[in-house]
Image (cartoon, rainbow, N blue to C red; front, top):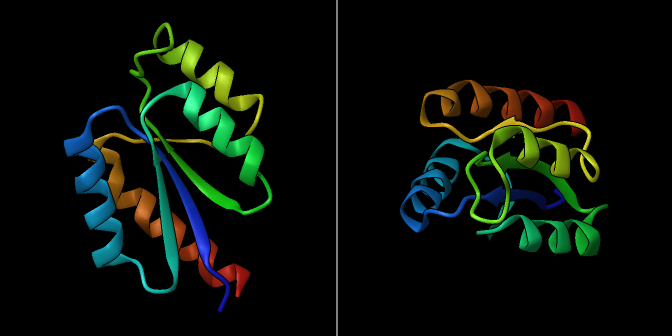
Length: 105
């Protein structure tokens, strides 16, 4: 089975840890979570690994952007589908990721 890369863009180390643990406990398969804390780091990662990244979890309040619309606007230049990383949205996101992974296999 191919390794699936999830790009997690979150400036809070605590929140990033919680999301990574949630993914580890709830997704089956071979996943690699790449965690970046800024938009600049995320963009660099996307440029380097654009063909390998399957999913992006994006915090809208990054320190090097001007709020949610700016964050999404910048990210959409590099990724067509984006899911916001918010605690109340994690559960449906995991369900969607599982469905998408099952459809790719």
